[in-house]
Length: 286
Image (cartoon, rainbow, N blue to C red):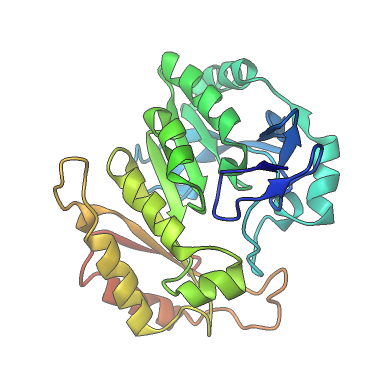
């Protein structure tokens, strides 16, 4: 058995076995990324769609996604490439791009306003090796690197990619360990540690999707925003109050079609609460 160290699951894998995320495999006594360079989605997006509001606004970024995810959010917006049978089918049809080729494509789109590469759509860190290798080459070409992630990864993985990542949007899906564990299949403390570490070096923005009955209380938003406000940079200076928070409205989808869309007034009210601690709070999907 070989242990994967990407996230809290610490999957023990037999030779040829794939982990919970569907993207990491044991080969020759080593766990590696089966999805390395396997691109399922590629698009030139406005940077604001990541969402990043305070990182080169008005520009575009080449967004690349693979397949696999280590969470099981019942409201997943990209379930066809993130988990389950559909993701396995996508893995069979995905186009393989080397880091060099993806960087060349990104470089070609500079003339259309592209500033770099965003690793997004599925969970990029289940294939962090491709993120690391590509981002390093992108920096050598003067391109920016963006990571859109659920933040469910070890400090070891963060240390591998952080030197090459300029900006991140990280999902902080709620502020309850119980909800993280029982509803999302995640680990709140791992996500908090990842966000805290990332904020010391990179530009970080945080997103919270407000799901009715799951994370929509004033108390939880007050706790979440207070924690973000306490974050520090690498010199120990408190900078959390300047970290942008995106509070987004939920719409029924995937395994949560039985719930109503979040009331717009609830989103606006929670945003006002977050503004008690944070300078930059944005509402989305309203």
